[in-house]
Image 1 (tube, rainbow, N blue to C red):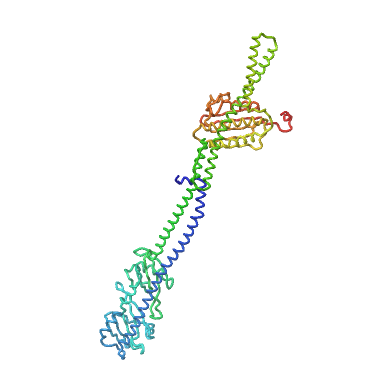
Image 2 (cartoon, rainbow, N blue to C red):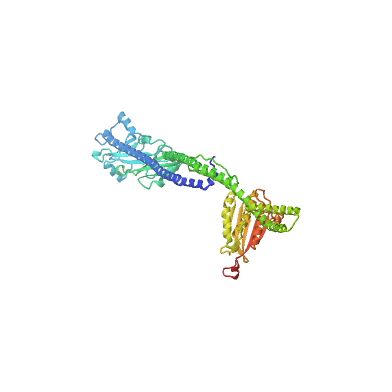
Length: 589
């Protein structure tokens, strides 16, 4: 048997599956979610921290390079100084080559304001503020930059020409930016380096400058010395880390911002790869758990399904049905018990059929005995009187033959008495509800076998009736059995049997309503005739309704029948209520 989704319509399967969800899937998913959330957060933080650390490393490299250039300026002052406050006339070639690796233009402004170009042809700004002059005269290096439209940014460095004799002149240089920005070559793969001034204008970029960078940085770089933010570039979402270079104490220059940008997907690639692997592993784990759980449910549901199908076949009358369960557990023992029960049900059904036949024969025998005994007794008495008189031998022989025939009939009647189940009628005050409950209890097994839903509704505080309990038991048994047979003949539709007890007009009424095949008008006219039946020979003899009518007649009760072919039949029995205790009629029971 294959486990299908319809198998989960059973309560046991749903309970097992719910227990599996509570004890297995929910904890696994909860643990997976917690682990996934923490690991994702850690991976995300590590990716962002790595980008921030790389940004600081590049920023420190730029600071080191500027410090190196500052040292170069002081070294040049010593190399070019003649001791008279003027530079060497004609810079040696080897020194010029070394200088051009760091600076593209080099010039000196003397104390008298004389401008002396030492190297290169570039224009170096000479206007310096008092604060800048004081900074230079204090033996420190000044850093400035200039931005021109359609021209690359230029960066200048100023230093005292002779720090030992302050005021002899200022050495000015334009920095070779190619040498300064060599630090960009050490950036991580897939990243772009940006260096911005205090106005968030780009001084350097390792790639093509994007307009979105300046706009995004101007909004986000005012929140601290370092940080991260996301911005939208032409290649998509970018993750940027920045670090501020503070030049004020050393170079008397506004701050620079070193910014390292990387596509967000690349920056968070480790986290994304982790998510994919984590989801895949959890999906495989859950699939294995589901598969094992389904196997367990199937192992438990297969015997139950076998038992259910077998009980349905027994309910349809297939007594003696046997099943085979090889599960090696309690279900296998249950299957053996089911087979024993099925065999006993078959034996019980055989006994019930036999008992019904004997009961019918007994009822018929009782009727025959009752009807024949009285005239036969009269005949026997007359024959005995006739034998006392004088007769001819031939007449006497005829009378003896008649007497022998009567005695033979008496012997036959005595044999029929053994089949009679008719007891002496004992009228007593009783409850019809109790009699109906007894019949319902005895027939409950039949209802289950025939898949009939039987309901009994009794009005509270019903009056008692005077009746013979055995006779009333026979009445309700016959009516219920007839209803069961009528519903068996109807192949479709719901099988329901409603029994309602209520009081009305001084009577206790019992309404028996079924959803069987119903009766035609012709059948209803003859239903109380003895030996009239529409059933098969193995289901009835035609005496049941005749007996019902006879018993009801002795109880002073009435019966009404309503029936419609294909819809069902309703019997309504009306019994006179017993007189209350203490009334004059109560003593005449």
